[in-house]
Length: 318
Image 1: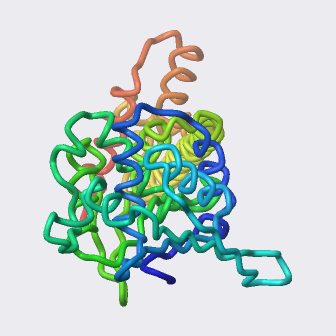
Image 2: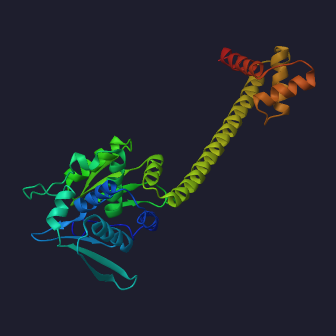
């Protein structure tokens, strides 16, 4: 956490791929202002004559630099410090000292009296596209999405200010994303868990290559889960048939022990004989076998009725 921002962009390759995919997309000026407003609101360290933004993702830092240049023609300073020699990670410090107060007021970060605001003015997010742009800025500066190859679906924004976190969550929910806010030590996490909502958010970012990748894996996982469920159901049915067959055979054995088999009803004797002859058959299979071999049609329901009668005969003798 540096300068009010925890950037996970380079930690998770899928997140980095999404950000790299969207940083060069052009939008109308009003949308770019909304995007930059979110970035500055969440990440800027505001001082007396300047404000600074710290970020690890070099591509996103270039996007921010370009936004300041194109929107305000401001003189921006970039400082780059290597923070990990092994993987060549850098911390980018974007310093804005030219037109800083004007920029902050335009972006809805400062009032005319110079007081800090944590929630943007309504006029900045007047349209649906501007709301999407603000969320895009949030994602670029503090958002991450788990690679769908992992065991869970998860999208999150790490935000220090509680009011800002609640505002971002409210904005997401106004677009039906079903987000929640969780307090985490010194910051707040705004997050989504539903795979379809995360897919919709990637679409909102216009990151279509990442969306296709995400959907391919999601479909594969859903298909795999469905196959597993079907296999489990099939196994459960097999287990049920085995249990039922064993119970039927046990009841036939008990019936023979307590009753004179030759004096039993012909239909009862018939089902007992065929069940012992085909012990692994289900009731449906037994009905088909008896129907074929005797020439008299009997249904699964008829077989079930005969086995219920066998249970009743056993209970009568107790």
